[in-house]
Amino acid sequence: MLGSMTSDVTLNELGEFLKKRRSELSPRTVGLPETGGPRRVAGLRREEVAQLASISTDYYTRLEQGRMQASAPVLDTIARVLHLDDDERGYLFQLAGRTTTRTRRHGRQKVQPQLQRVLDDLTATPAIVQGRRGDILAWNALAAALVTDFSRIPEKHRNYPRLIFVDPAMRTLYADWERSAQTAVAQVRMEAAKYPEDPRLIELVGELSTRDKKFAQWWADHKVAARTVGTKTLNHPVVGELVLDWDTLNANTDPDQHLTVWTAAPGSPTHERLRILASWAADQNMATSSSLPL
Picture 1 (tube, rainbow, N blue to C red):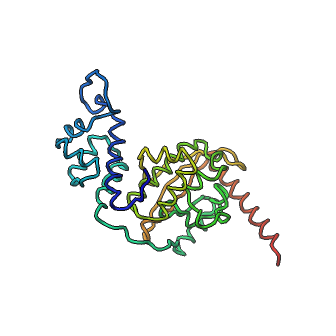
Picture 2: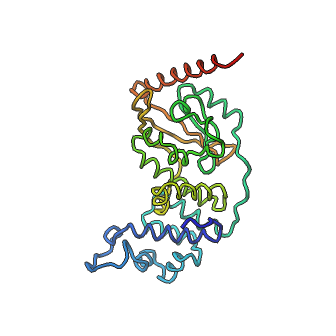
Picture 3: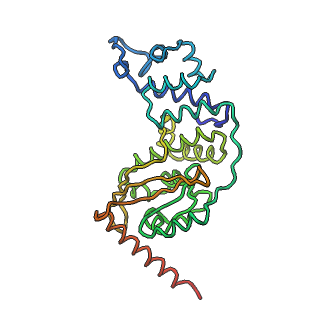
């Protein structure tokens, strides 16, 4: 199921993705008449997808079986037929477009000093920088107070999807842990389309699939999501419930680095609680500094 994510496997991933998406659609959803008889497969049949996409059943079958690569216009039509959203459509094109290109090796990601200064200056706004695979590259003091002390996590394990599944505290911190965890899996799946040969990504997926049955289940669903915007509700042990909007900005120096910030509307209870948390974090840091030997 997980495979090695090599270029040869990418077409198979595309086929599995198409199978999963068509299994979730009914004939009525796409405007086909219901026959009323039993159906051997869940969702649409291959010939029904082919009919709606105006291609031969043999062509679509070979595409699902990973035996060929479709053209961009055909992929666009299939995306429309399968009612793919923007993230799913992008994922489909990434899989199809990387079948003949080997992924180059990437060096260790580093955050530019100026970006770190931006993080440090955001004293009232939690913020982190994530890299490939969801690796946590940098953070500010309020993000550490909000989520966890990232500095205590070994660098090789400093990965947000891993943290969500491995750290028991995350299951109580996130009010809707399952939804957040599913989103994390979908974002990792999107990364796998961009970098199918990344050994650390392969290792991450293998580890989490072994450690957590729900990760394996959600990975097999082939859901995808990009890092964009959203809202999270957290149950913080110090300040209580926080309803936070999050937004993601890309770094110009490295398109694989994403600055995520959590904010709340001015005057809202969460906005006030963030101020209290920032004050608490500052007191904790001061207490730690004063306890250090001179």
